[in-house]
Image 1 (cartoon, rainbow over the protein chains, first blue to last red):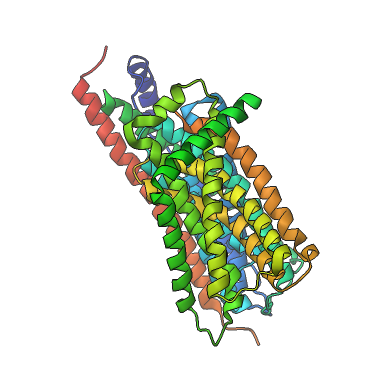
Image 2 (image 1 turned 45 degrees about the vertical axis):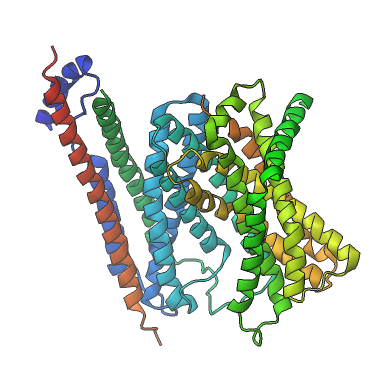
Length: 244
Length: 228
Length: 49
């Protein structure tokens, strides 16, 4: 840790004359903490949380699916807010933040959809159901993918940032409409509810694991976001170098 | 405001004049719509599902895809000779460019539907419910088309500047068309089944809300898609 | 009768762990490659006073 600090001081003096020097990577304590939190949650969920007798062991997917969904939507919220502020202030760091949150977000959204299916099959009897939440998540995935592909298709950084920001903001407006449409659809077309258990009030043991999981995955999101952001900063520095 | 509207109407007229002169895009879109309507028919088992049950779904899917054809054309036409720069150089408010192009697209899409709706009615044995039914369907078409062109015109402006062009436009737009098509198809199905309009109010509210939100949002966002 | 569906939850947990590990690794790997190229570019430019 001391050597890292010394190296950083040396780099800082070099950086004053060369503004594009990439910072030496410091020990990523946040990431390690996040990983430990997730591992602890997994261990608690697998070994120290009682199984639901009615639903069986598959119920334990509940400890990873809603937290992933929460992060998926949180990440998009960050994309949307960063996009709005970017259009206002034109700071490229905001665009970078949006890009990073989109990438991390699509990972979490993919996980949400996969774990959702794996949960749906044993609990509800079907791999997919067109309910409002799952469908909204699916569309969130489409928006994310569209966002990332759009970024890949525009070369000019300024245009890329503006276009992405527009899509990020419009996408966030779309999701409530999707949710509403599916909700209304299901209200008017009652679909067979295949043994879906109503949300039980969780006994304390399970509730603690559940909350722990939310915290751990949120921490993981922040850690991944920060790591990805550092990559984006380095990439921007490289682009500037190679542009010379 | 009147200045913007006046400019928008001028731009819309210019676009439609160009389109009317060549008519290629319009005819291609119409032929595509008719072909798709016919092909869809053969994709289903007529003994399992009555054609008239399929009709609303087919009608609105065709609406989406032929709408996309028209949308790309609206900015594609400016690519030649960098005509867009000329447009931007003119003392025309940016919003007017968007509104003008959107209005031209609206006319284009509705013109396709004037042909597609009777075609679906014919091939799918779809009862139109007399004058009242046609009027209701027409009103629904206009509402849906407004939403489609609001979002589609914006994304067309963006796609035309990217490497992927025509591929990007459907990919970006289709998720946004869902809250238009679902209410529209559901309402159509109900109207054709003779249900009272009151039953479809929920869907219509979603559609109108979508139009209001996205016309506003896309008008505000459009200047950001142009060069500074 | 407790349903015999442990397989699903094993698969889910493994996938969650695997995807996150793979993604974190991809960030680490990409950052390493970018930093190498940055160092090379800086070396080409020569040391600045």
